[in-house]
Length: 216
Image (cartoon, rainbow, N blue to C red; front, side, top):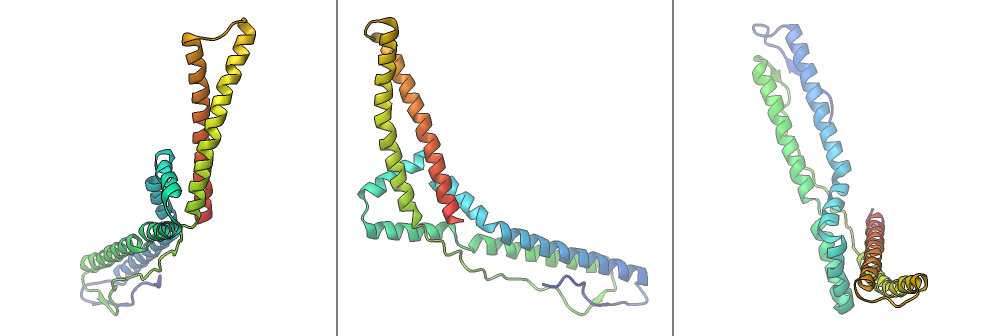
């Protein structure tokens, strides 16, 4: 869309040259603002889609869902799932609807200007702009690797959790000189478990970010 103001003719009985000039400046400013808003919308649309996907499908809890799917789903179902997720989160529908609303708002703004500046005879009227945006065509093929990595993270942190507990018990036994029982032994197990949970969450977060970067 051009940033140029609409060519207008004045009705000498109603509008002065100053008013015509003011009108042109205001419509030009409205056009520039509209184009700027459209550009921001298009430039940010993919990151918004990615953010929605992250909120709904990633994280520790959602990760377990896809770990079970990875374990029990066959390859054909995984392929269908990845296509469905790509269509659900990375389509252009929301962006097109927002662009349409921007166009309607712009047309109304210009209409209001022409009502305010009575006597404007515009050579053209603002038309509703419909953007036919292609889908991002994002195929979530990397989701299966992401889920495989999460399975590896869970297995890889469970075994060290057990070994860390044994190591802490061995260290304490050698310090105080006798076997650990009761609350002290339970406390050591809790400490080792908490450490491994923190490690697991950090690795899962890193795995999620790797998936997002691959989609970008």
